[in-house]
Length: 173
Image (tube, rainbow, N blue to C red):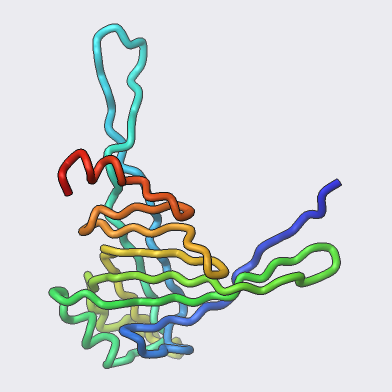
């Protein structure tokens, strides 16, 4: 019988253009990578199959713990893309307790889509949430690249495999 292992990430830190924002973000939603699917309708087929036709746009959100002028000042410039890094600690547990800890690093190149001026409520901390458009993302676990996508350079790698090698060659780019 194999030993069951459980992975947990319960905390992380955010960096914006290399600046450590420890304790300033409450929540970070990294993009969901979703294939854009195209239906194929043709005579003689009993159904409508769908096939990958690229990727849906990549978006994320950052909920800030308070008002940070240096962050929101950057969010106010939609024509500039910024480097975001989210670093987490992936803990693995089994029946004996924690058996390992490895770094999880999400790298993004993103532009801010919204500038929150805040939601204020009596006796509650004000809320500030920014939406981001992501143009590049890379997820690394324990030094191993799991995923890398650059929509403006036609790069799409999964577990180190370049998924677009033939495509780039076929289109001459």
